[in-house]
Length: 121
Image 1 (tube, helix red, strand yellow):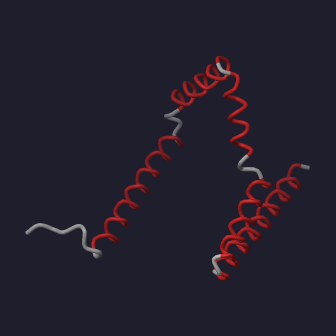
Image 2 (cartoon, one colour):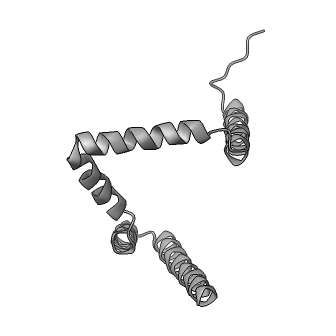
Image 3 (tube, helix red, strand yellow):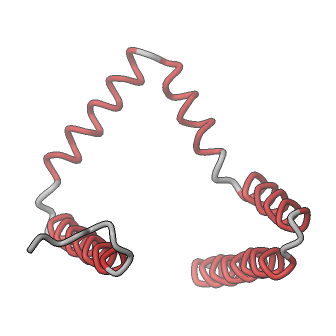
């Protein structure tokens, strides 16, 4: 008898199976990195990136611009736009969840940074 994988009962099991595979792969790769077995690859990648930046100076500027997308200002604007969108869609609960999570993450980050500064000097 053939198994029909299009039935809804198999979808959660397949999703769980693939999630477990991804966790296993992450664990295996993390173990290899922690053991230092990827050092030659890391050096090769770093040297290649340096060569690329030397050959094409615009690559460094593009990477700097992309790293700016992770700044606190950009992330705050993105959260504000997301909360605004959720309010327009009349999903007050989700808007409160996103806004509260962002504020708590900001407080937690500030506390960790303050502790790091205090420990340094």
